Length: 223
Image 1: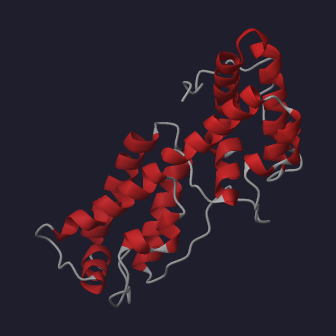
Image 2: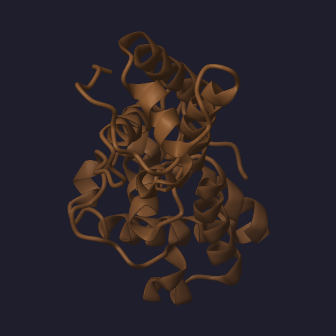
Image 3: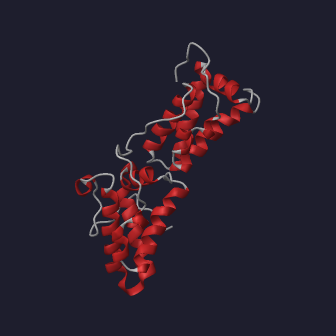
């Protein structure tokens, strides 16, 4: 990060910025903790003083950016390149005195529906809908933000998540639905595809996972 000519007029802690709360939990925790730990002897703890200390010295800001990058990889996974980019965007916004940010991969048109809101969910069995919802909502514990637009983008497109999330859905639904698991998993995956189309109408071309080819080296373990 480059230094600024004057101290940034930041009045908030980085953890309270709307931009930071829109990160995946695994990334927002890192950004907050890396900056906040500067108050343990290096920087004064008030919001303005902390931002000034963290951002206006080249050596300090470069060290923070490096720590954020390495710690996000460790927290979010080695494939989470978009989380690293988004976390560094938040730090840049923070240093500029801002609060909002635009992240790569987020649909331009906001999505208001969660997967449980889709009318198609009523056409599949209870065990299939339970498994599908469990996997998608489970992503919000670490990998994905909980806001509707960010969640669908993350579940379907971030870091090529579609095949791995599809694999997790299939495994979970097959376990819940017992003898009819394979057939029920296919119906759950068809709803997942509809869900992804909310963010990309060309989802069929944009994602590679299918109900007949769900094996992936990045497959998620069932939640």
